[in-house]
Image 1: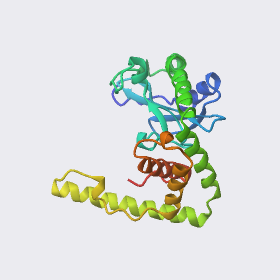
Image 2: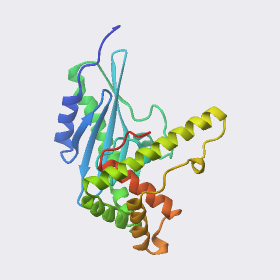
Image 3: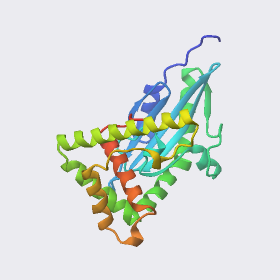
Image 4: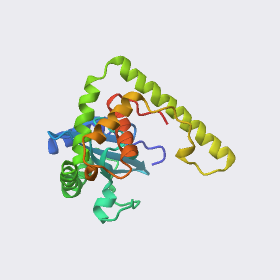
Length: 249
């Protein structure tokens, strides 16, 4: 039917998840995405992101992103994930890349068909996602770097006062501006973008201290490749997550 609108599904979807997977708390939604989060004793958060589509009287729903990470308020942005992430297509096919069309569950635009749609999503979570989360926890908890880095940063974030938080945010905003100007210059000149060419402000002294402390707490064999860059990236990603500073660039 031309002009037909999708029936509301948010409340019923949240209700279904709260009954079948009560440990996953509904974190909110946009017009097409629904986020659920599980908090764990080991400091890792498991996130499930569902996406809805509606076309010609058919409701489609898919597990678009799943992640086990140290991000408390993950927004579905892969490059901010400090941990593991994938999507349902990769879990179903076993391939390391996204395969369009895989994992979508569908029903007609009638309320009585929603339980079947939700049950299909629930089966995918049971079959593919829960086991993936277990694997991620085992991998992260066995990494000396991940456990030391995350524990250290949690304690540091808790100790920051308002002025320190504001100062680091100001640094990040300046860095974002530098990246934006560099990107525009590259597009104008036709040159390939290179991070090394960005005139980024000096590394904030507090963040510099975090990097040094984490490096100093680990053996060389426990450090990741390009350790300083990796620690800086993870530290700033978790800072932005903890203090709600996602939308910079």
